[in-house]
Amino acid sequence: EWRAVEGSRYFQSPFLYKENGFKKKEHAQELIGFLSQKQPLTCTVEKIERKKENKNPPLLFNLAELQNVCSKLFKISPDETLRITQELYEKKLVTYPRTDARVLSSAVAKEIYKNIHGLLKYPQALEEAKEVLEMGSYKTIGKTRYVNDKQITDHYAIIPTGQGLNVLGSLSQTAQRVYETIVRRFLCIFYPPAVYQKVNLVTKMEGESFFSSFKVLKEEGYLKIAANSFARKKAGESSKEESGEKGAEEEVSCDEVLLAALQRLKKNDILSVKELGIKEGETSPPKRYNSGSMILAMENAGQLIEDEELRAQIKGSGIGTSATRAEILKKLFHIKYLSLNKKTQIITPTLLGEMVFDVVNCSIRQLLNPELTASWEKGLTYVAEGSITQEEYMDKLEHFVRVRTNQVEASNFQYALRQLFDAAASNYKKTVESKRGGK
Image 1 (tube, rainbow, N blue to C red):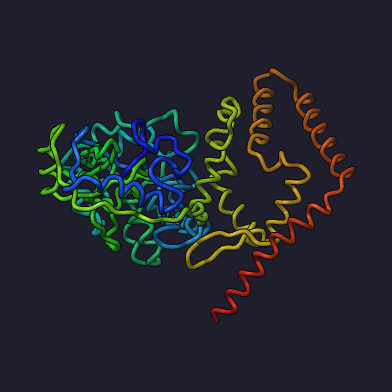
Image 2 (image 1 turned 90 degrees about the vertical axis):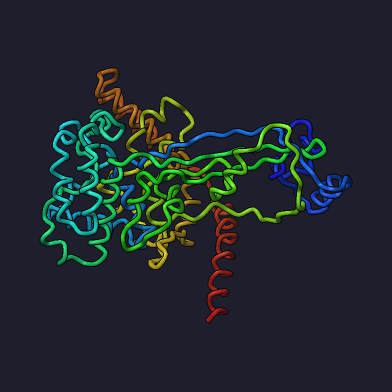
């Protein structure tokens, strides 16, 4: 991949789209023409970096993370995930579901052998549970990032109890699959990290720099048991999905033969270039939220706050709680502010929802900002600490409500709202017409 770094003839050029592309195709063709003047085409190895990368097993499930994963895997709503997990809990198959923690307590970690041993009666994870017991890694789990008393408020992460397996067969197929998903996430933490061999390569042609990144999976580690029995994947394919991480740059997965060739390269080596090509692409908007990713966004709403002190105030709480977030979403669907595609679990706003947003945005914009919630939470903390009295806090809150209400009563947003409605309605009209045309 070419990049217009310092030294490039296009460095900081207005023709660039970011640093690795052009806004217009003719400028890319011009670059290829310049690089193709000297034949045969060759490049020089400017820099080569080899390193091993460990990818640790992901943290355990809290309710929000489980709802997100189940939305992707099974296309079920957060409300349905909670219902199923509650059923598993009542059947004594898993621990308490309404939790925000993704770790275990030290007390539970000391007794975790019982949970693993109980899974020897679970055919889908029998071999994995047996291997964990043989490895003995559960004995030192208390010293890992998966055990942290400080990160637990009321309940620890959702894990299998190792009990109640005699009733599992009577549950729905989806419930059984949710259970297996919880079991595998649990067993993963007792396995070693997945190990990748990475090679980062920088080559030069006529003063222009090209960057390549390759990686190959050397040791599967936890990835060999991460995928559910009903949806087996190649271990490397699901690594990013399992960890919830995305790479900073595009990497090319390679085989052992290519890796061996890359390992032999050294600085100033001359390589032949087969051809130069243009990769065309279009910018795309961010992906729409699905019901699971919306739950995570609600949980992590505090990350949107720029003020560090306020961000710390709301950290760990976000919008709603693990017990109420699914109900909040359900209510928004019920009152038709949002629309849910039940097949894909994709969430879209309705015209009514957009208008409610526009009304609030025009009248009391602060209500849409998580900073307001954080500042109120900060005030409650001050009351609890005794820095201010309850009366002082309520006076400030009532003052806010009174001032904003008076502003709304004195303002006239009808013209602006009419324009916003017309603009939004035209998009919904197009959507309806396109659906009719497709029938």
